[in-house]
Amino acid sequence: MELTTRFATSDDKVTIDNMLTKLETEIFAERGGPLFLKDLHIKIDKTLSSCVSEFSNTVPTAFPSPLTVILGCVDTTCVGTVILEVDNKIQTENISIHPIANILLLYVDASSRELLVGEKLLNEAKRIAKEMLHCKYITGKTLPGDRTSKSLYENTGFKAQVITMGCSLENS
Image 1: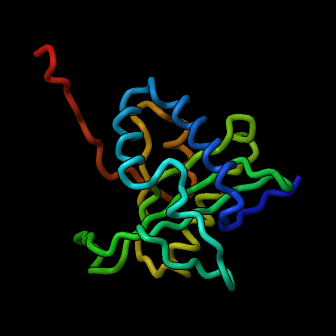
Image 2 (image 1 turned 180 degrees about the horizontal axis):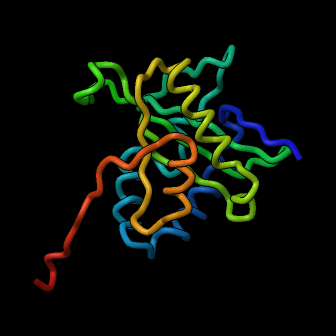
């Protein structure tokens, strides 16, 4: 069994659409799931036609967003994806005006989650963000109560920074 990562191409559109559909099914009923999905759909078209592109010489072409789509594969089967967006506007107190990579989406098929595909994808995302996209920082989101994703991020060097709280005003 070989774990690999690669950039997505236009030939991967159906595979990525299928992963997004599975993600939506898994998280829609979770706390924060609908908000996460709404934010995700604002950023990327569900068909991903705007961000799946051909690559030359392993350097991403400029996406309209700009988005970078990476696939995680077991042997020749794609079982996961991570989608990066570069934000040139964010500043933090420790980092000057350098670009920041945001992980918009991290998904690994349930049948492959014990195979370290997620770790491989996150480490590749970090490498690409630093070496190819020239970012100085990378962020990712996870739903509250999703200990598996939180642990995955922490195991690859991420630290929790902000917890967003919310309250329905419908019945208050």
